[in-house]
Length: 83
Image 1 (cartoon, rainbow, N blue to C red):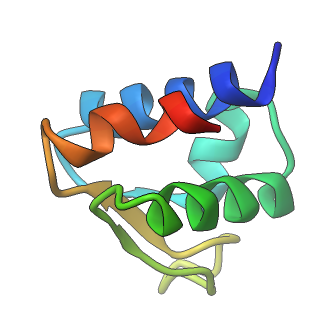
Image 2 (tube, rainbow, N blue to C red; image 1 turned 180 degrees about the horizontal axis):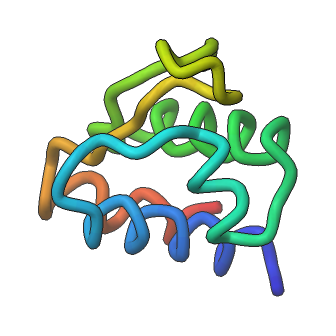
Image 3 (cartoon, rainbow, N blue to C red; image 1 turned 30 degrees about the horizontal axis):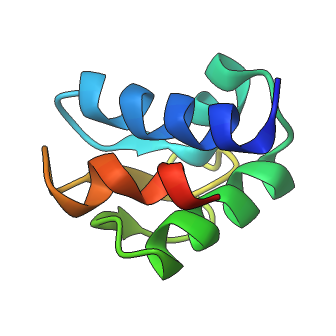
């Protein structure tokens, strides 16, 4: 899978989730490491995707903060195309 495909998968996965999801859960769902997930989110945010959340530890002690895709269309949809 190319990086562009992985970034698109990340955006689509975030859009499917109705509530914020942990970084660890996203990484497992996408089959990538937590570090790769953080890099991919930073890339998408740098391209204008409206992804909110941040790296850290959740209240339950699991890895990764919680993330959501605020913009259900627009900039987030096109962000992965340029990668």
